[in-house]
Length: 274
Image (cartoon, rainbow, N blue to C red; front, side, top):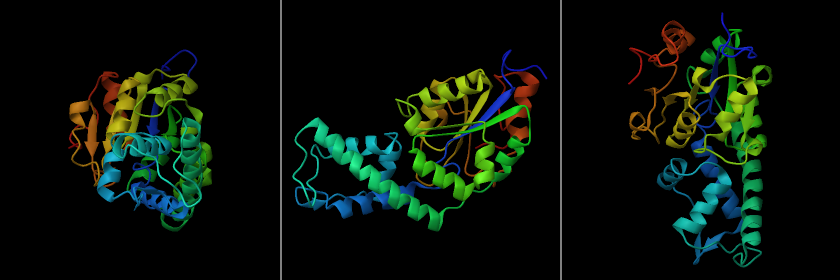
């Protein structure tokens, strides 16, 4: 087969987001943040800092990355940073950053404990990934805004270490200077694979991820969750959306068959997508 570029080892790439795609993690993240806030004694105007399910859904669909969510919450939603059990509210930008860094560090540890107890892959993900890993013409990658420590734990628990080590590219929040919805993480993946973004299909679950994938010039398949089901993904340019890869029997052929036959502008998941 003709390669996507003169130097690329692959014709196409299938790239997975991690949280919400490989595993439904939103609730585990939320519980870990609330546990970190509680452990630090975070309060604003006498009220403990606590993120409800509904509010975390808003954060999920507005802001990429954990530290950015905290900054958004304190600066935009509350207009104030919290006091903690040990300290007054931060008075400088440096102190604000230090507080958010410390909360994120503890949250990641709490999250890894929750993952070890509760993590399972979403239906159909491992089957599709294995099919792609077995095809020498298709690169397989993971691009996640989460920290390296958190994602590696998720991938080892859900994919297993063997599968994780077979990935052709794995780019995490620590690896890029701008997080989703900025397309940088996907642009970087295409560069590392030496492949045209048009030859790449991204599996995402949120509006933030969709905007990043489309901004990089890639096709995007949405596997929505209960917290993102009502989003207007097609209005933002999604190429397909399904509730679960497994429930719709999504295979490599249903994603790449039409592209191989009719070129990169071909429709994907014909007859299978919502």
